[in-house]
Length: 231
Image (cartoon, rainbow, N blue to C red; front, side, top):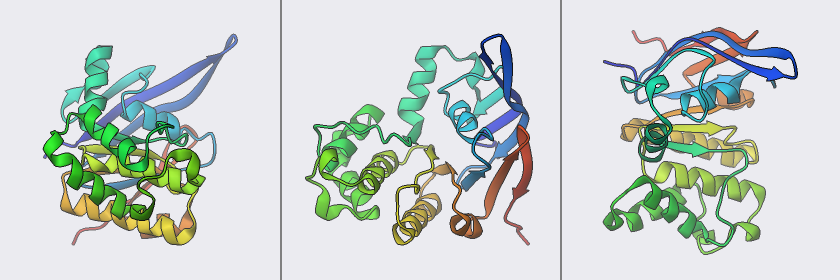
């Protein structure tokens, strides 16, 4: 089976004045569909940079990235935008919620952007909000919610359309341990019951312990991979 994401010899550098800073150097990875993947590593190890490359939000300095068999590097900006809109869901650390929209309306907005038929909105909105435990807060706007609740709205919006891939940057960072594990179990259910792959970054050792697929970034590359062993 073709991997949903394939990364070949990817290098990412940034210029800082006259100095070139290498963040990623020769990344190779192959991610099969229907997996929950974690990227771990120290601050500055390149986790978020790699996530942005996988989500076609940035371009590698060199190397190749394929999404569902399609070469992302060769896509123009319009094609990359369409890919993100229809095939991916994102959970950013900044949440990215629309301030004047309620929880329900923010999730609906995500479905609208993804092109999900209107007839499916009501069910998908209710299901995703229930999964993140915000049914009693669905009429509230972001400024009426805590940081952790806003994070959960962002997660609900990302999972509602059940895209092929969800990319989540520290999705449980603002949550207490009980809610963090609830979100991870929701992610596991989504991966199990739909054709969605979730790639997330995290520092939480408790969460890393229960995941089967973990990539550790160190010295600009993947230093270690924990993978489920199938007998």
